[in-house]
Image (cartoon, rainbow, N blue to C red; front, side):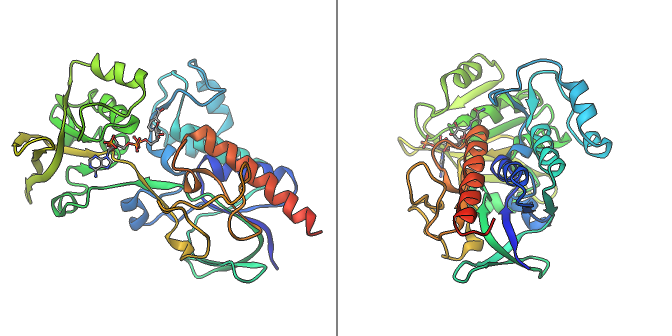
Length: 349
Ligand code: NAP
């Protein structure tokens, strides 16, 4: 038997597509991703990037205020217990994701906690192969697998991963090894500035290492950064090597100037990378057309169509430009409507 719609991915795009297709009686099946050590390492666990963040201030509908009572009543107690304490300031990423998931489930979406590791879009119904070995056939597919954090690719960075090197300040920043110690954040975008600001709550000092002399981050985030006396920006520098030893993990970092030959060593106990993202498309193995940057190509303006009819893409996996929770949710909704209309046009729904 083939499914009407299979949705791959569990960020805002995936859950929005699930809510819309479930309400259209398509009984969507969602592969939310597997809980594996490899996914943990790569940053591709279920619920996506928002699950690795703190406050979400710009998702419409969640102004600052006390949402605690609503959260307590809307979520199962076991999920609620695992959430970071709510500060009463809008909503956090993990809360938003759990609420979206619950909303999809409430409408009848079925969720499988597994990865799709291979697809065959050359035959119809499409074939999807799960990590567990399960084969699922689908009349329509929505790919919403998002993107993951990049690393610089230094051997020393690899050596000290989880021992002082991280790409997720929110996941790791509160660990004892980083408390009251100096730390580095690499990058100059919103993520870097957000992470530096967040880490300044725990660290004795945060060095923001940026390769240019101006930041890419939005003005409001920059203002917050410059007003924070615990953050020092190291302009025109890159991270050359993470320093440390087997006993202590990270103990320092060597920085290299991007404008002259100068090198500098600073003592830090943590290095956080915030240098952009890579789309999660490797499981597609060339079956969908990608952009030069490796994102899924939307083939028609203002539609979520891909190079294969019946396969739709939503969220960061197809968007290297906006990359916001709200835009991902928006394209998730578009993909659901596109899939529904496509199935209807073929008399399959
Ligand atoms: P980004 O905007 O692409 O910024 C990446 C940063 O890393 C840039 O400053 C870049 O330097 C630097 N970089 C890239 N490769 C590097 C390398 N090999 N060595 C050293 N530096 C390197 O990525 P992002 O900060 O993750 O943000 C992605 C999107 O999410 C953006 O649209 C952003 O607005 C959004 N976002 C929003 C919020 C928020 O609103 N709260 C929070 C986080 C992210 P250059 O500047 O020199 O290119």
